[in-house]
Length: 66
Image (cartoon, rainbow, N blue to C red; front, side):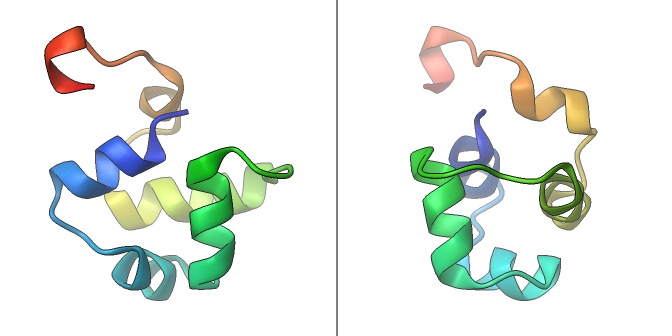
């Protein structure tokens, strides 16, 4: 997943994303680092807060944007 890249591209902090998605900042950080399991419900909340389609979060970024 590329949640961190999508978030930073929008110049959004983890705290702002956490507030917008209704999740904790710690949980957002864990998701970005790939620690633990993320539920589909949480992933939907994050992609909604980032205003992106769910499938985009699974696509690879071009090397120039990584």
